[in-house]
Length: 146
Image (cartoon, rainbow, N blue to C red; front, side, top):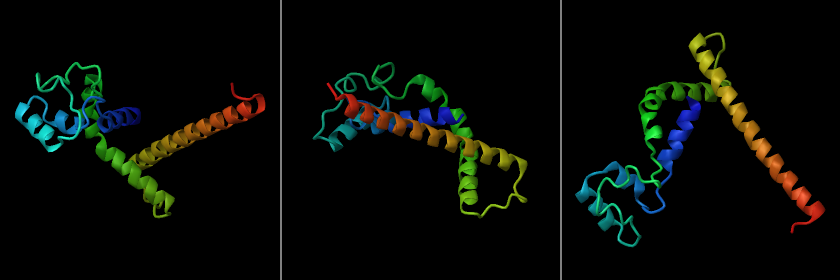
């Protein structure tokens, strides 16, 4: 579920390379007048040339970051949002020493454990990337870059 949340957030946060106001346009997909109002509000940028002909052109477009498989996960992810918020709050309380382990419920303990495991995984991934970059730099210095 955490991986799905990250994928979904990545899709929402990204944009289309042909439309600088992608998020705004996608929110009013199919509404030709609303899309035209967005284009008029941002006249100094190059907008997607497909949307004026078809107000739903994002659907099926290869450049659309909001792929149907990611949108299908939206409902599940948003339903689990309170669990993610709770896990995040529990982790913050634990890190600041504000959480009493005697008072924590078994559900909260499970959420906290999962959150810690995810944090450890993220940390390990960052360390592996730093190590790989450092090794590449050392090898480049040792053998010279060509």
